[in-house]
Structures are given as structure tokens and as C-alpha cells.
Length: 383
Image (cartoon, rainbow, N blue to C red):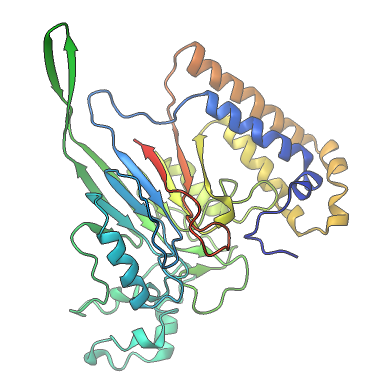
């Protein structure tokens, strides 16, 4: 059986669930027809957010300009402070005035369970009683919600030099202020400038990922997939959420072959950020619009109900058509996806309604599958 992080061929999707496979592009088309999910206020400056992830020690040659650069983890490969610092030095050289970084499962240095022996020697001498077994128990929480720095708060020499413009988030938030700009308008021979008010955005970042396959000890911030590592962890005031794992059913190889976390998905419905940036699943790279309405709920129920079929053999998958044909709840949810999607288009395009409770979802993995090449372009979102 192929890795769950590899995209399966189209026949596998279709045989497992022809209903979900055909509804997915229709759902995305209806979302696209509804228009942008989030527009900047008319009296405030737009903020250009550049999203990247999973660079794995490599440097993308042409990062677009923007007001904010976000890196959603997997800066390196071996997880050493040495490799991480090299990636941070590259990020520091970029011209974006604000940069936000979280770590991924390959960035072992940030999780005490995964830290390499060469990097454990940086513990201060007054903590020499911190044995290797203690390192394992420090982060024994299945979500790794505490970092080593929580325990070594008096360590005066952090190993990573972030510089002045990079904000590293690990189960933490930051509120950034973007200064005002002016816009000019002309009427005949008269030119006037209108000042735009400054903007603030609150960004929350968290690195934990579900271990849907047996990860080795070198992988950071893993938790059992059945464990809820997310409920009530994200501040409700969050405008931009940065995680390494995707949520279930959103750019995670869904439908059927989902690799995302259902508990993170539930948390997203509670917080509803304007932008969610992640990576981890290289093959699911892309950008989607999400509207928190009945169409989206029906689509996510459809994905969740078909997730168990991913474990079936190809022969057993041949009966996907019959299962879909007699799945009344699946047929009802498919109808709801279409009905409420069409109503959303009518609301936005015919009645001129505002797209509220909506946001962008970005899988920003720059690594093209497992090729070792950064072929996926950075994604840009204007908020």
C-alpha cells in the first residue's frame, strides 16, 4: 500500500466513492463563484500575505513581495539547530517587514523528545541533572504543548538567532501592526490623497501533527491521531492560524484519503480565522475558499463518512458505487452541498450579500511531493 501522504490515482478515488469524487469539483466551483471570502475594509490598507512551507533546507529562488511572510514548518531535514539556523538566515535575508515561523515535524530541535544529541548539550550547567530520560518525559504530553524553554527558563543563550523581524510561534500568538498608507484619486485636474488607517492582525501558531503512520523519535510534536490536541487551544481573536498539519477534509488529499486532523477541523469551526496556512502534506498543495455554512458542513460529513474506505483493498473498493448508491445520508449531504452552494452564489452575486464567516485555506508546501525540489510556488493572499 502506498504512503498516506502520496496522492492516489483518480481511479482509486472514483472507485472508493464516485459520489464524493464528483461532488468535490462542483463544491469548489460553487465556492469560487461566490467570490473572495475575505476582502480588506474599504478604509484600511490591504495586507499582502505570502505563504510558504516545507522548504526542507532549500531556498526558494523568487519569493513574492508582501507585507507578511509566513513559513508553516519543516525548515530543515535532520532537525539540528545548525540546519534550522541556516534556514532562518535565509528568511532573515528576505525583505518582508514581518515574518512569522512555526516548526514542523522535521524541525526536531524545538521538541525536547526529538532533539538531537548534538543539540542537547546546550542545556546550562545548572541543569546537568536533566537526564536523557527526563528529556523524554518533559514533552510526554501527547500534543507536546510545552517546549523545552518552559523548563529551562533561565537559559540565557538560545541557540536560534531569529533576528529582529522573525516571530517564532509555538502554541503562542502575536498581534502585528501594519502602518497606514495613502491612496490617490484624481478628478479632472485635481488630485487628492486619502489616508488609509493602519491594520492589526493576530496570528496564532502551533506545530503538533497527528502520527497517522509510525513516526520515529526524531519527528517533533507528534500525537496519536485519536487524541484531541486542539480543542480550546486557539484564541478566538485569531485572524491568521498557522499550523503544520492540515485539518481533515481541507487540502489533505480528501475525499476518502484524508490525512488531516478532525479535532483541528472542529477548532476551526469555533474560531473561523480569515486565513489558515499549513503544509506537511506536499501532494495536497493548493488554495481553497471556505465558507462556514451548511454546504461546507455537508461536504465535511461526506468526507468523514468515507475516510474508513481508505483502508480497503482495491478489490473491495470496486463496490464503492454500490455503497454510495444505497447511502441515503451521503446522498442527502451531496444534495445539501449543491443546494446551499447555489444559494450562496445567489446571495453573493444576485443579491449582493457580503461573504461573512468565510476564509482562505492554504496548503503552502513548496516541496513538490517527495521530489526534493521546490516546484510549488508560494501562495499570496490579500486580507
